[in-house]
Image (tube, helix red, strand yellow):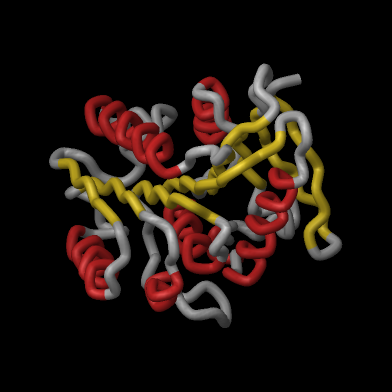
Length: 237
C-alpha cells in the first residue's frame, strides 16, 4: 500500500504517522511534513500525497497525540505543545523513515506549515541529519514552547539550507518578524532564501480555507519547494 498510516510509540505514547511510500526504486529520499494547527488533516495529507507522487518518502506525524481527545472549551491544542516533545516526535518519525527497507530512505528534508513552519525551523537546529528545511509562514519562531530555547535562539545550530515562504499581509509572522529571522540567519552565515508575497496572509497554501488560499503564491511557492528539495536532497552512489 503506497499511502498508509503507521503506528509508532514515542516515550510510551502511541503516535500515528501518515506516510507515502513510492514504489519501483530500492532507495528514495525522504521528507518530514510538520502539521499545521488543524492537525494531520486533508491539507497535510494532500502535501504527503503530492510529495509521494514526486517520488519522495513523506511522513507526517500527529503531534497532538499526547493530548486528551476531549479538551475544555477554549483550550487550544497548539498551546499545549512543548518543544522537547515535538523534537522527540519528529526524531522518532525520522528514525522510522531511516528504518524502512522497501524502499530504503537516504537524505531527509523537512517542510512545515503554520505551526509546522516553526517545527521545521526548530528541527533544522535540533537534528543535523536533516539536509534541507522549508518553512511556510511559521509563526512564533521567536517564542519558547516549554523550557527549551525558542527556535530563533537556536539559529546558530542550523546546519542545512533553509527556504521560507511568507505573506506580506500576515501578522504571525509579521513582515517585521520575517525581517528579523532573515537578518539572524544572514548574521550567522546560514544559507537561506526567503520568498514574500503581496496580497497574501497566513495559510495561503491551504486550499481548504477559501478565505486565506491564494492560488498564485500557493502554486509558485510549491514549485520553488520542489526545486529546493531536488537541489539539496540527492542520493549519493
